[in-house]
Image (cartoon, rainbow, N blue to C red):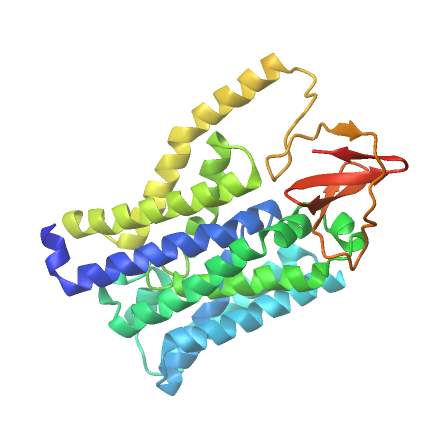
Amino acid sequence: MTLLHYDFVVRALLGALFTGLAAPAVGTYLVQRRLSLLGDGIGHVSVTGVALGLLTGTSPTYTAVVVAVLGAVVIELIRATGRTSGDVALALLFYGGIAGGVLITGLAGQSAATLNTYLFGSITTISDSDVVVTAVLAAIVVAVAIGFSPQLFSVAQDPDFARVSGLNVRAYNLLVSVLAAVTVTVAMRTVGLLLVSALMVVPVATSQQVVRGFRVTLFSAMALGTSVSLVGVTTSAYVDVAPGASIVLLALACFVITYPVGSWQRARRRRSAPFDAGPEDGYGVDTGHTEVPEEHVHRHGEDCGHVAVPHGGHVDYVHDGHRHAAHGGHYDEH
């Protein structure tokens, strides 16, 4: 409790709290889309944004947000056109972002030590205004990630089915990329631009070892990210080590501990159901269904307002708290 008497420790813990909530919330969708390294690429681009802030004498946080969002939009457009593969687009961000940041930092007359505080985090130097900006950005990220979770999950799970179901796949993919860019700048002072991707991905991977279902994974990853962030900052205050490194290593330790548990649970499920008769989807809904011998009076379509979820060879619609799909004179209900 003595640590809480110091204002810089309180600010550090608040920054860790907001970062721990926001990073895994976005990371859940990145893992679902198999774009775990997107946060790393955006982090490299943000180096250029930080350097522009140092060069112009403005807040590096604000310039990093602008440059990170622009970088996220560019990489999503490159991926959408199909002319360049995702890994090549990420490589362009990696090399261009870090080179531009180092070059502009030199032009600004700043030393490498200044840039290192953003590359590897420097949460103990966070100011009151930084805490406010971090809190506002984290609140926006969490609200969007949870509020749009049905649509974002559908797009991440199967974009082709989501597209034919009437969802604007490109817009939602772009939204996830922008959220990732904002999250990177939120975590910039906590774990650093080079380690931010770990806080976005590792808590999600750890949660997937022990829980099932998309929403459970989302909230458990946020809880785990918050816990390791707070414990990492507290540990660094007592042991005098870098907070960012402590947070990431704690998250990795959790994954190492839970991996055997996850392997045992998967093996147990295979023994009890060797033919996998009813696996769950990302909503935690069993893929089995009940046939209801009644004609569904409501006709679903692109503009019906109900969330479409791909399921096997057809599309279910989320309606009145459950999912169903009309088939001729009856409908299947989950």
